[in-house]
Length: 236
Image (cartoon, rainbow, N blue to C red; front, side, top):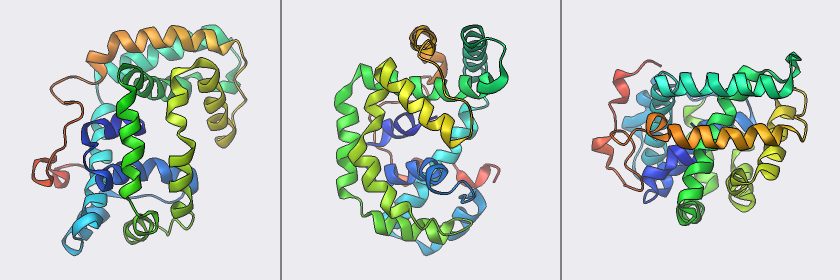
């Protein structure tokens, strides 16, 4: 799952939403820096207020990902997209189509949610106006495997750039994908890949009930800490 799919249920809790974004932000600022479930859980008794909400957001992200990546919907659709991308790109292994099937699926889930209600994306970004990036950085420093020194600098850039809106346009999505490809040292995708992206959009939209089933995803609903999944019952 990507930023917006993680957050869309919790838009009334901006500090919690910031916590939801932390694992993905860390992938950008320092891929060696991680937040581990057992470490976050151990720190909960020492946290209060907004700091606690950030920590619970991190746990929710980890729970979401563990659930999502084990679902039949994720397995079936990511494999379907990987095969379609291989047909589009040819047999060259430079693009790692298995990786592409995974990441494009998650970006297109965000794109579908945004296309269905762009006002929710506006609310998502506006919520970060209530969040202190330096304070988030301090909380994450206390929870992570090593200090994410540049995280407080990334957060306002993330908000200002608003790149999630680009996912609804194939030209802009290809640009964003190629930024990811450079970051992981893979070959850039050619312009012809936009055709595969357009076809993939239809696949993802059709399978949304299987990817984000209504019994787990009630959109735009804030929840209390007491109603979160039992983080302690999950693997670290």
